[in-house]
Length: 466
Ligand SMILES: [Zn+2]
Image (cartoon, rainbow, N blue to C red; front, top):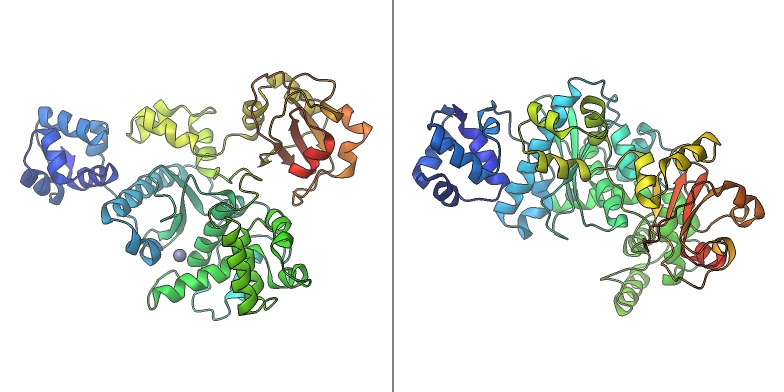
């Protein structure tokens, strides 16, 4: 026996039509339509096999009792105009299935307590953003080091989607459940690091302010943008940073510091009254003239943030590395699909390092034991390789090395601080990778420690390229 709702869910997830599905399953389109409308039905083993194959799901998936559809949430605000309905359905179904897996796991774990404030109807958007910063345990001022991390710590489930439509729908959010007890933010891969930060802050704004959306949808979009601006770059900070003449060259370092695109910074400068409409337009024109609308400088200055919580839950319940075969027994999807899902989330910090450095694990742990590394996170793609021109720290090595650098504060990505360049640094060259492959991954910053791979570059250029 299979459930009609599951057939429809899988079909929409795969972006198939009823006709296409019917052909694959050896049934008629009318029959598929009928099945989808029926609560549960028996279609015989042979058709069932073929139907499941066509939908690329195990038979057990179709036999699993369905749960409620995922609410459309903020998807209705901006995507509807620009995306075909089939694509939207696909994205929504994917989030829906991931949500079901998440709920299944959450029921067995102690979830972080929900700290997303309910600020419906609040007129002052920036105050709403400030209250949210506070609710999330962020200080009123300063950059938000990791937006997705802050969301996940506040109990938001961040879903990394496989289905994606570049530039048309970066993210959407929704309150799930009859009690609206589970906030979800779904994000797509492929967005730039600054865009991921902005859109997830924007979605946070929807979660906080627009639980039951209605009215002028464009106005809600603007509110969410303003929320994101204040959340990432509080007014008082912005006024201070923009106190001198705002020029494009001044904005470039601010992008790295505050983790916002130059285009958003221009808008923020206008919002806080640091520039007028004319200056704003002029800066936007300059942005276009330099070709920065298509690609801004600093596009690979940081690694895009990736969600972690879902994978962490899987690791807790299904082992680390995640045993997707066991996960597949609890939630019937093919292992290949579950593996791809796991890979979309951030790995355990220790393996991130191993992957990036190719350094033997032992060295990494030695570095940890010495206190040089506490925990890790990747912040940046740094130097590009230029073999042969090695000087400074890397001079003694003929291949890429990783160094552990003390004293790089987490929020400052501007440059390697002075202690890193001193002789003392050598003591901390604990994680030396012997990889000869010209990988160009950059720096990992851990609380006050940065691990940087130096690819035959002088110290100065490393500093500049961070
Ligand atoms: Zn929106």
